[in-house]
Length: 534
Image (cartoon, rainbow, N blue to C red; front, side):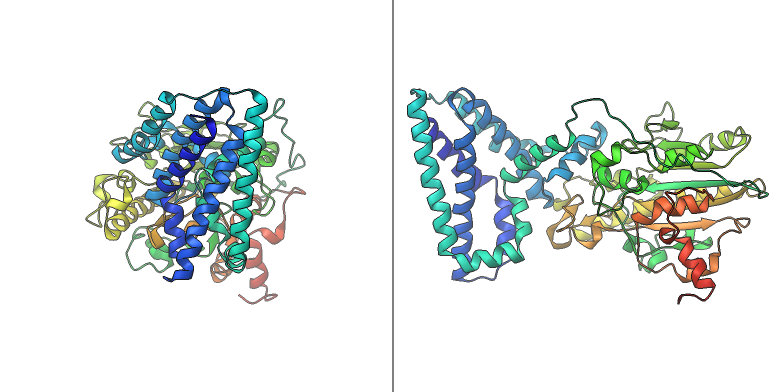
């Protein structure tokens, strides 16, 4: 068999068996009609044409077998996640995958994934290994490839011309559907990720806010605990009007909820560095963020004592230059059962505060929070208030109610954890001006429109992946903030872009990188002065 025929077989296989999510989403975007059916068939031909073009250009005799095997295995895994969760594998998702640790990955592995890999990856790969390939001189091989390319290009052009008006509408109104093409999108995204993250030399980090100072004066030191949440949707907080009581303990506190907080990204790998970066969502880039100091560095320059405690995968590089502690194992975390709990990050924290003799303190607690898909693992049994719950990572096997119950129970546990943080701050009110900020990194899809988890490209991600839980609490002595005015302005649209400047404002840091107009507490002060409507 010549490589051309093998490429044709591989193309047909990939289109028919690894692109169910692509055709499902395309079909769902068009009404049932003969015209729609003809367009969908044309899209299948177009997809086959581009896959065949890719294989023809890349699969030369010495690398044909290994290349096809890699593509088949990659496509089988991609097909599983797209079919199961309706996610797409773009460059940001690949970044998120690379940043995910083994423990998180295990939640995504089950028997169905192995079946996909076996049937769509391993078995066709065995065929590729066993089929005899005929050899021919390079010149003949080149001529044959040029003929194939010419035919494929002719087919692609003919389809575009034949359905010109339909494709004009498709590329204008449904251009995000291209993200579901398998394996074209994942291969393109992998190449883009490598191009953006392959460094030719050592990382050079540009200094930021070296002028940062804490003005002299004031009778109190400041103690701010920043709780970095995980996968918490704004609409699942009863403080924001959710019909279920998911915040019974926080409702007893003087909490300021920010119900219209929007994330910087739809994945932890993007949102966490972005939250602490001076860059906003429109200018954020991973390489740019890694090569520039962040909020924690600026605070350190100002003499603030910074501590990062993590019960999630990592700080994503944010805390590389400050003291950080890992609370994911029983060796460090005293509150562990099925997994180590967020409240364990509070262990020994009072001792740390007591032993810090002077200066302000800024502590980050990075939660495991609502990390999916195993929501049922994210809380102790005592917090299973809403039942029955989904007890599998295969969310499509559970009812909507079971998924929501497990997710809401995890929010209920976050309510408990945040109440414990506030209790710790209250016992330090005599020595500090105390405050807590809680911000989730991104939201989550729980089956709405057949979409699960998070990480969709921003342009196609639903609001449930962008609108995140955000809360603020201030101790009685924190008199620099007009809490009443802040509460009156709390429903304004905010975003992760505001966090960098808000923290600097809370701690009273003077630096040229601080933008008063982006400080969440600043518009409230202006409103209190009657300069803008509250």
